Image 1 (tube, helix red, strand yellow):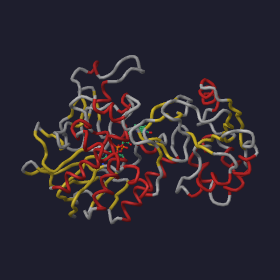
Image 2 (cartoon, rainbow, N blue to C red):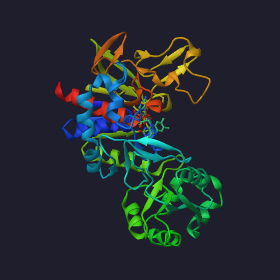
Image 3 (cartoon, protein in one colour):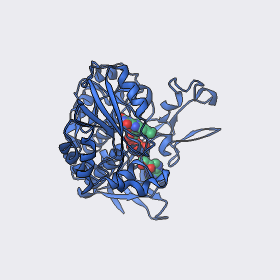
Image 4 (cartoon, rainbow, N blue to C red):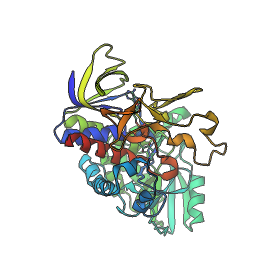
Length: 408
Ligand SMILES: Cc1cc2nc3c(=O)[nH]c(=O)nc-3n(C[C@H](O)[C@H](O)[C@H](O)COP(=O)(O)OP(=O)(O)OC[C@H]3O[C@@H](n4cnc5c(N)ncnc54)[C@H](O)[C@@H]3O)c2cc1C
């Protein structure tokens, strides 16, 4: 089977590249093993959080960083397209292009973010709190949302918080077994006809407050119920992230996949690429777990398999590997240098990843593979946790690689 481009990995990077290439007329295949980091999504895209100005922060990064390879002017250009790009898919993000704001974490901390889903709470970059008093609601029995930490975080910033629990008989079945009281199961219940009843319960606590905050447990399959609920609640309603799984993250993953398929793309979920055939410095074809000896050929390939978290990289006592093609990996030889004992310090292993040349072509035996590009968190040279650059690197590198393929 022959495609224009085959993308390995269907997370944020793979889907961004797949959509972009398909929109521009390419015949694409995405092969994806399973869940991606989007299933753990906070509700905010980070571009670079080292400074209030993400672009000032980006310009200070080292020469091996993927952003530096992509180039400052290109990053400005791609980043300007991100909000409209998601809007076209039906996903609304808010935020100033040149200024990070603050988001509230599931444990009540405040972190810099670049774009945040419009249904979520976000705080201006100068830290001025938009509310004096809020109702902070949880669903009775839901353990993945910690109102006491969030209330403490808000109190530190001078916000008075009224914490309340909401109980609805429709959730009793889930409540019988605490392991069933997960964000995704609650979101399956809080849908359609029940939105009106949920709004009525929320409104009981919404009268004397500036805003209502609640866990993101609405809108698993689309944002219609989110908007309906916001309209029915008498005060501004903002969602806060829960511990995983992330309801909006799963929704975004599904909406991006649907968009890709609508554009004519082929998406093979639950299959893994296991090997590739190289010829004259090019990748000729790949084989997958489910399709045995069937060879999938393409003019170009994109490796978007993520980092250790998604098995895009694996490690043993002997070293770090890229497991499909045995590509060159930037890592440290001495194992004891991979990590710092203080878990709150920046961890060196977070910078490990596939080596690439200046065009983000993957290196094998110290030579770039002419038609194999890498995008997203499989790339070496960035520490998304320390820099706050995860989604930014995924989206910007995917758009860059897609442009390079189309220019050929
Ligand atoms: C838990 C977690 C939460 C995060 N939350 C945020 C956040 O809220 N905001 C933010 O800005 N950044 C966040 N990040 C940073 C994150 O890395 C990026 O945001 C981004 O989503 C990474 O996308 P990706 O496509 O590069 O990789 P991934 O999302 O990891 O996707 C890689 C995909 O490749 C597939 N795959 C792997 N091997 C194979 C194979 N052999 N064959 C086929 N498919 C394969 C995997 O199954 C997976 O679907 C988070 C990271 C993690 C680990």
